[in-house]
Amino acid sequence: MKLPPSGTTSATLTRRGGLWYIKAVPDHGELIVIKPAELTSAGQLHGYSWEHLEDEHGFLTDQAINLGEDPLEAIPAEDFHRVWTR
Image (cartoon, rainbow, N blue to C red; front, side, top):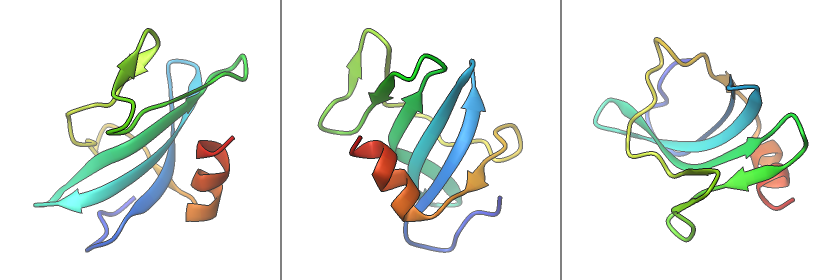
């Protein structure tokens, strides 16, 4: 996935057996996650944002996405919103 020039990006990423839905923004050549939501293989949803920074399952990252190491698949913003508000 290429870094978008501006605006928000919605994407998915598979990691640690779960499917991550992310909302991210480009900033100085990096892609910064502002809302990650993990849908676990057990069907649990764990979401993080500035309103909910962390819990016993995880936290809002302070690191940019490494597009070379993290294979993202772009998804429509509506798909992210459907999962986020689940």
